[in-house]
Every structure is written in structure tokens, then in C-alpha cells.
Amino acid sequence: MVIIAQDDPILDVLNDLLNYDEILACMVASQTMISVMPDQELFKQEVMQIWDIIKRAMNDVFVVIREYSQAGLGEIEFRLQDYEALFYVFPDTENALVAIIPALANKGLIEIEMENARRKILKILEQKETPMSA
Amino acid sequence: MRNLNQSNLEVSIGLSRKWDAREAGRDVAKNIIEKLKMPPSFILLFSTIHYKKHGGFKELLNGVWDVLPRNTPLIGGTIASFINNYGCFSRGVTALAVSSPNIDLTLGVGKYSRRNPKRSATSVAEMIKKGLKNSNYKNKLLINMISAGKLPNLPFIGRVQIIKSKYIGWIATHIGMKLFPIIGYGLGKEEEIIDNLGENIPDYYIIGGSTLDSGDMLDNFQFIGEHVFTNSIVALGCSTSLPIYLKTNINLIETKKTLRVTSSTKDGRIIKSLDNRPAKEQILKALDINDEQINDLGPFYYRTSNYFPITFEEDKRYISGVGGFFGDNVYLGYKIRGKKIKILSITGKHIIDLIDSTLREKLNLPFLFMTSSFILLNTLGSKSYKIKEKIDENFKNTPYLMVCPVNENTSTPNNPAVARVYSFNVMSFDTEDIKNYLNRSEEKND
Image (cartoon, rainbow over all chains, first blue to last red):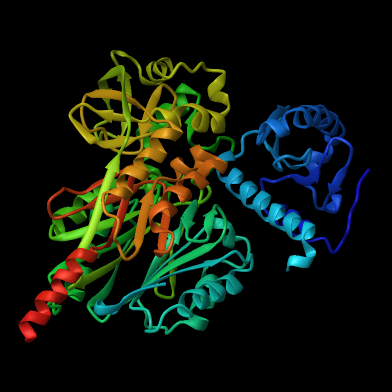
């Protein structure tokens, strides 16, 4: 299941990530659904060729995330063929910010901006939870 | 913004995350100027490489000058990442602006630094000395940005960082190393530049680093005034009554692994053999890497080599990573500084401890301008925020900017110049000394 709200501020954060050459695809997802995903047309074409297998592998990773996020699992990643999938888990939830990058990318620098995106999304989620306090 | 009332020193930090170069330039300039009461005396401007594809660096500077007075001295360049009061970033533009009536300033530039590093450095030193010759202030500071090494992207060969073929490796070692600088590529030769600057202006405090892209080493740019340069050194010379604070530290562990250089090229930039065996074979053996793993260039660096820099028994101030391989030969970031190589090790904890202990040495600084290799942040990745947390522990309300070039350089009148990687450097004005200076001035006036 995919929920896409065009005016969702989380979508802006994800679209911003897609401006990076080395971020091939990204989304906010959990095991049961992709909650926010940019227009797939914005994903780099090379990743679409193995999209189905990546999605299947992602589902398996979300089983682990569901099991251990309450225990403090923060990040998880796997390498599949020439790609790496990075999962930045939102604390105490089953949701994660997911990005697909080339396996040979300069990962440390990408991670810095992934962390910034996670922090921004967390802030947006917090604001959504307390609309009256604004 | 921090106003050190009595000395009229103001410092502000700017940030823009806009993608469009011109808009980002305007944004960062507005950001710094709105926090200052006086016009800035000088500006240090740093951006990541991304603006190359989003309008270009000329437009970035045009945006800055849309807002700021055009005669404000400005230098800077492209860096891989930075940390400031607003966060940790590997994309965006940041600036540090200083306002003070007690500073005289001038700019210096040296072109074709890869081809002729000594001549470029001398040109910078001469311009700075000439520009400040009428200044009566005794404390001298030079902030520099140097064009780092640039890898040639050759047809059929690709990025020339690792050449597997022994024959092409031989050509790169003996012909390429001479040819690349002529066509604007090759090593940055920062150690020659900094040694030369240190000799030419020994009474200066020097801090700076090398400009780069996102670590691919394919492109980098230097900013000075309204101009964007490549293959150059840009420098800001300051003469001031404000006492200068400059601290440089390293925190690396010496492993038991040592290698002896048994053959190198005449210029000392390429090691041909170690312990009478091919240099590449020996380095890979020391790092426990097999030939298959070296196929993955990225992982080789960020999972292995980055954690094991090297130094020389004869001069341990110099620290370098392995630059790459030409056939059986190894090139470092710098000229070899001795015959006995020592392999060092660093972990994320060492990096955090280095920053923490250095910052604790002086807690009442009015601002922090810090430099450290981008390797450190690349190594920490998302955990780079640990560095910010350490800075915020004592300097949360102090304007600060840490920039991450390829390598960093420092020099003080008491410590000879050095360009290296894995060091952490802090520059500021010494608040206690400023207060003493002001008190002395007041006593004199009484």
C-alpha cells in the first residue's frame, strides 16, 4: 500500500534528497506500507531495473526493524548487487527513512544528509502529533 | 552572533540550504549580515560542490555580492562538509563573518599551484606582506584555501587513482606525474606550499586547508572577492591588535606495523618498494586487504585505509593516507618524510576524544573557526552529530564553524608549518588576552 499526499511536507524532504546524484530512490516506509514516496519518475532509472528485488529484500529488513526498533535499533543497511539500501529508523516506531545508493558511493557524506532528513521528518511528525500546541 | 563588547568584535555564522546558487549566495549573505551591527571586516565563504550543477560558483558569489558591500575582503572555496551552530551538513553554503575596527586586511592569490607550488606560495606571501606593510598591529594571521589534488579522468583508463596495469602504472609514475600538473591535474602539493608560506612569513599564524568536491577529487574551486579560481591558492592576511589563538592536535594510535622505504622516485612522491618488495603488495599486506577488495575503491578507503593513516618515524608531525596505486607503486598525499613508515590507527572514538580534549583547552573563546579533514566526517557519517554535541557542550552560544577540506594546515611563530590529515585545528582570538590588552590600554589612557 502506498499513501502519497502531494502537500505532505515529508514529501518535500524526500524530493530534496532525490536532488543528490547518489541518492537513487528514497521513501518513508514500514513493513506493511510505504507511507510517503516521491513520484517514481524522479527515481534514477538504473535502480528501477532491480526495484522488485530491492522491495522484496526491504520487506525482510522491516521484519527486523519491527522486532528491534523498541530495543533501540537506529540504522540498518544491506548491499544488493551494486546498490546499498540504508534504513534510518524513527525511534520507537516500525517506520524508517529508506534510501538506495550506489554501493561505491561516498557513504559517509550521504549519511550526514540522511541524518538531517531523518531529523526534519521527525520534527514534522512531532508537529503533526501536537497540532494544538502550535 | 557574539559581541565582545569592549573590543567591538562581532562574529556571525551564516547558512543556506537553497539549491539555486544565486539564491543560496543571497541567503547566506543576508543570514550573516542581519546578525551584525557593523559591516563585516572579512568573510570566509565555503560551499559544497553541488552548486556547480545548480547555477555555478560565479552565481553563488554574485548572490553574496547582491547583499554585501562589494569591497568586503572574502575568501573561501569548496569543501566536502561542515559543522556550524545550525547542524552538520554535506550540502549547502556557510559563511563566517568577523567585524572589528582592530583589524587590517589584505588578499593574496597564487595561480597554477599544482604546477608550480613554490612560485604560487611566494606570490601569496609577497601580496600579503605588501598589503599589510603599513599596518601597525603586531599579530599576524593568514587564512588560506589551496586547490587540492585533481584526478585526471582519462579515456579508456578512467579515474587515475588506482591503476592496476604495471605498464600503465609505470607510465603514470614516470611520465604522468610530470604531465598531469601541466594540464591542470595531479597532486595538490600542499606540503610544499605550506612549507614555503611558513618560510616566507614565519611571524604569521597560519590556518587553512585544501578545497575539494564530495571526495571524488575530480574538481574543486577557490573563491576570492568576486572571482572563482581553480588550481590556485587564495589567502586572507590579517594584521590585528587582537591576540590570536591557534591550537592544533592529533589523536592517533601507533600500531606495531612498520615498513621501510627501499625505493622511491626522485621527487619522493611515489614509493616503489617497501622492505625490498613491491610497495603496493606490502601496503595491502599491512592493511590486510586482498587484491579483490581493492576493486571496490570506495569501500577500500572508507572501510579500511581511512582508519589506518601513516606517518614517518623521522617526522611524526606528517600524517597521510594512501593516495592510490600506480601499478606496483604507491603514492601518498605528500612527499615521503623519511624511510621508516609507521602505520597508525584511528577510530570514531579517537576522533570525538580529539575534538573534545582540544576544545576543553580553552573555554572562553569569542568564536571558533575549526578545520579538520573531511575523512573524519566521512568516517563518522551520520554520527558526525556527535562532534556537534561535543562542541555544543561548551560553545552552544558561541558562533562556530568547522570546515572539512581534504587536508588541513597550520603554522604558528613557534611551531613550524605543517599540512596533514587527521588533525583538528581551532582558531580564534584569545578573550583573556583581549581583556588584558583592553585593560592595559585603559590604564595607559588614565
